[in-house]
Image (tube, rainbow, N blue to C red; front, side, top):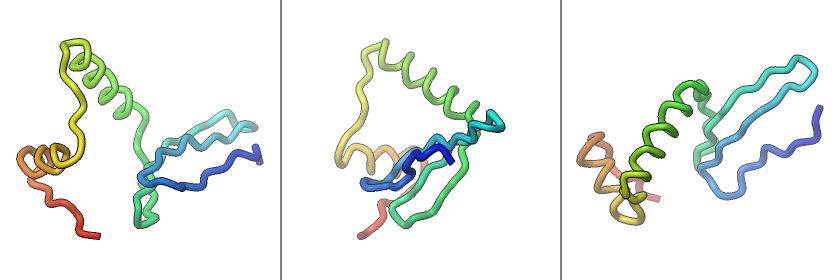
Length: 82
C-alpha cells in the first residue's frame, strides 16, 4: 500500500491508482454518485491532445450554463437535477 488517498471531496474526481510493486496504473473517474468508471489512458491522451490544440487556437473552456448547452446540443444529454 502506497499510502495515497483516493477520497473524492469535490466530484467528479480523476484518480490515478498506482500499484508500485507491480509497476501498473489505472485511471478512474469518480462521479458525484460514487460511481467509479475506468478510463483507458489512450482516451485521456487523445482528449488532452485535442483540447490542447483547440486552446492553442484560442478556444476557451466552456463554463457554467455553457457546459449544459454544449452537452445538450452536441451529445443529446440533459443536465442532472440535484
